[in-house]
Image 1 (cartoon, rainbow, N blue to C red):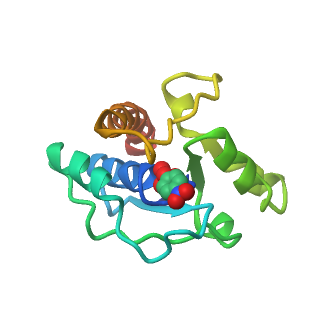
Image 2 (cartoon, rainbow, N blue to C red):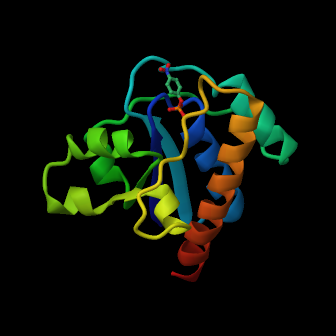
Length: 152
Ligand code: 4NP
Protein backbone atom coordinates (compact mmCIF):
# COMPACT_ATOMS: atom_id res chain seq x y z
CA UNK A 1 0.00 0.00 0.00
CA UNK A 2 1.33 3.42 -1.01
CA UNK A 3 0.04 6.26 1.15
CA UNK A 4 -0.28 9.75 -0.34
CA UNK A 5 -1.22 12.94 1.52
CA UNK A 6 -2.40 16.13 -0.23
CA UNK A 7 -1.74 19.33 1.73
CA UNK A 8 -2.90 22.95 1.36
CA UNK A 9 -3.57 25.78 3.81
CA UNK A 10 -7.24 25.39 4.67
CA UNK A 11 -7.91 21.78 3.59
CA UNK A 12 -11.22 22.98 2.18
CA UNK A 13 -10.41 24.12 -1.40
CA UNK A 14 -7.36 22.66 -3.14
CA UNK A 15 -6.26 19.55 -1.24
CA UNK A 16 -9.79 18.04 -1.05
CA UNK A 17 -9.95 18.29 -4.84
CA UNK A 18 -6.49 16.72 -5.15
CA UNK A 19 -7.57 13.90 -2.81
CA UNK A 20 -10.76 13.23 -4.75
CA UNK A 21 -9.07 13.39 -8.14
CA UNK A 22 -6.18 11.07 -7.22
CA UNK A 23 -8.60 8.61 -5.59
CA UNK A 24 -10.58 8.50 -8.84
CA UNK A 25 -7.43 7.57 -10.78
CA UNK A 26 -6.01 4.89 -8.45
CA UNK A 27 -7.04 1.54 -6.99
CA UNK A 28 -7.96 1.87 -3.28
CA UNK A 29 -6.50 -1.60 -2.68
CA UNK A 30 -3.05 -0.27 -3.63
CA UNK A 31 -3.15 3.45 -2.90
CA UNK A 32 -4.45 5.26 0.20
CA UNK A 33 -5.11 8.96 -0.35
CA UNK A 34 -5.92 11.58 2.30
CA UNK A 35 -5.64 15.37 2.66
CA UNK A 36 -4.86 17.88 5.42
CA UNK A 37 -4.32 21.60 5.94
CA UNK A 38 -1.41 23.42 7.54
CA UNK A 39 -3.93 25.83 9.12
CA UNK A 40 -6.55 25.12 11.78
CA UNK A 41 -9.32 27.52 10.65
CA UNK A 42 -11.71 24.95 9.20
CA UNK A 43 -11.15 21.74 11.20
CA UNK A 44 -14.15 19.40 10.97
CA UNK A 45 -15.75 21.27 8.06
CA UNK A 46 -16.80 19.90 4.67
CA UNK A 47 -14.87 21.10 1.62
CA UNK A 48 -15.75 24.60 0.35
CA UNK A 49 -19.06 24.52 -1.60
CA UNK A 50 -17.20 25.79 -4.70
CA UNK A 51 -14.80 22.81 -4.58
CA UNK A 52 -17.76 20.48 -4.08
CA UNK A 53 -19.46 22.09 -7.10
CA UNK A 54 -16.48 21.91 -9.46
CA UNK A 55 -15.85 18.30 -8.43
CA UNK A 56 -19.49 17.51 -9.16
CA UNK A 57 -19.26 18.91 -12.69
CA UNK A 58 -16.46 16.37 -13.21
CA UNK A 59 -18.55 13.55 -11.68
CA UNK A 60 -16.61 13.43 -8.41
CA UNK A 61 -18.28 13.46 -5.00
CA UNK A 62 -16.05 14.98 -2.30
CA UNK A 63 -18.83 15.77 0.20
CA UNK A 64 -17.72 12.97 2.53
CA UNK A 65 -14.41 14.67 3.31
CA UNK A 66 -13.81 16.56 6.57
CA UNK A 67 -11.05 19.07 7.19
CA UNK A 68 -8.18 18.13 9.46
CA UNK A 69 -4.85 19.74 10.31
CA UNK A 70 -1.46 18.39 9.23
CA UNK A 71 0.50 16.89 12.12
CA UNK A 72 4.04 15.61 12.53
CA UNK A 73 2.67 12.02 12.68
CA UNK A 74 1.71 12.42 9.03
CA UNK A 75 5.39 11.97 8.22
CA UNK A 76 5.12 8.46 9.72
CA UNK A 77 1.74 7.65 8.17
CA UNK A 78 2.43 8.71 4.56
CA UNK A 79 5.00 7.88 1.90
CA UNK A 80 4.46 11.01 -0.20
CA UNK A 81 3.27 14.44 0.89
CA UNK A 82 2.20 16.66 -2.01
CA UNK A 83 1.94 20.35 -1.12
CA UNK A 84 -0.05 22.82 -3.23
CA UNK A 85 2.23 25.87 -2.87
CA UNK A 86 5.52 27.19 -1.55
CA UNK A 87 3.98 28.43 1.72
CA UNK A 88 2.55 24.95 2.40
CA UNK A 89 5.99 23.51 1.65
CA UNK A 90 7.66 25.83 4.13
CA UNK A 91 5.07 25.09 6.84
CA UNK A 92 5.27 21.32 6.36
CA UNK A 93 9.07 21.30 6.23
CA UNK A 94 9.15 23.30 9.47
CA UNK A 95 7.71 20.19 11.18
CA UNK A 96 10.08 17.70 9.51
CA UNK A 97 12.33 15.88 11.97
CA UNK A 98 14.98 14.55 9.62
CA UNK A 99 16.06 14.09 6.01
CA UNK A 100 13.70 11.13 5.61
CA UNK A 101 10.72 13.37 6.46
CA UNK A 102 11.96 16.15 4.18
CA UNK A 103 12.38 13.78 1.23
CA UNK A 104 8.65 12.93 1.30
CA UNK A 105 7.56 16.51 0.56
CA UNK A 106 6.89 17.39 -3.09
CA UNK A 107 5.35 20.36 -4.91
CA UNK A 108 2.39 18.84 -6.74
CA UNK A 109 2.74 20.96 -9.90
CA UNK A 110 6.34 19.79 -10.33
CA UNK A 111 4.63 16.67 -11.72
CA UNK A 112 3.65 18.70 -14.81
CA UNK A 113 6.17 21.57 -14.63
CA UNK A 114 9.30 19.72 -13.41
CA UNK A 115 11.59 21.72 -11.15
CA UNK A 116 9.63 24.98 -11.55
CA UNK A 117 8.07 25.01 -8.04
CA UNK A 118 4.86 26.56 -9.38
CA UNK A 119 2.03 27.20 -6.88
CA UNK A 120 -1.51 25.91 -7.29
CA UNK A 121 -3.21 29.32 -6.96
CA UNK A 122 -5.31 29.65 -3.80
CA UNK A 123 -8.88 30.05 -5.12
CA UNK A 124 -10.44 30.86 -1.73
CA UNK A 125 -10.92 34.58 -2.42
CA UNK A 126 -11.46 34.24 -6.18
CA UNK A 127 -14.43 33.34 -8.34
CA UNK A 128 -15.64 30.15 -9.94
CA UNK A 129 -13.02 30.32 -12.71
CA UNK A 130 -10.37 29.92 -10.03
CA UNK A 131 -11.82 26.58 -9.01
CA UNK A 132 -12.09 25.26 -12.57
CA UNK A 133 -8.47 26.33 -13.18
CA UNK A 134 -7.38 24.57 -9.98
CA UNK A 135 -9.29 21.47 -11.03
CA UNK A 136 -7.60 21.40 -14.46
CA UNK A 137 -4.11 21.78 -12.95
CA UNK A 138 -4.72 19.12 -10.29
CA UNK A 139 -6.25 16.73 -12.79
CA UNK A 140 -3.12 16.91 -14.96
CA UNK A 141 -0.78 16.53 -11.98
CA UNK A 142 -2.78 13.60 -10.56
CA UNK A 143 -2.75 11.85 -13.93
CA UNK A 144 1.06 11.89 -13.72
CA UNK A 145 1.09 10.74 -10.09
CA UNK A 146 -1.38 7.94 -10.83
CA UNK A 147 0.72 6.79 -13.78
CA UNK A 148 3.72 6.33 -11.47
CA UNK A 149 1.69 4.71 -8.68
CA UNK A 150 -0.21 2.35 -10.95
CA UNK A 151 3.05 1.19 -12.55
CA UNK A 152 4.99 0.93 -9.30
P1 4NP B 1 -7.14 25.98 0.58
O1 4NP B 1 -7.81 27.44 0.51
O2 4NP B 1 -5.82 26.15 1.25
O3 4NP B 1 -7.01 25.60 -0.85
O4 4NP B 1 -8.09 25.10 1.35
C1 4NP B 1 -7.99 28.22 1.66
C2 4NP B 1 -9.10 28.02 2.44
C3 4NP B 1 -9.30 28.81 3.56
C4 4NP B 1 -8.37 29.77 3.90
C5 4NP B 1 -7.25 29.94 3.13
C6 4NP B 1 -7.05 29.15 2.02
N1 4NP B 1 -8.60 30.59 5.02
O5 4NP B 1 -7.77 31.48 5.27
O6 4NP B 1 -9.57 30.40 5.76
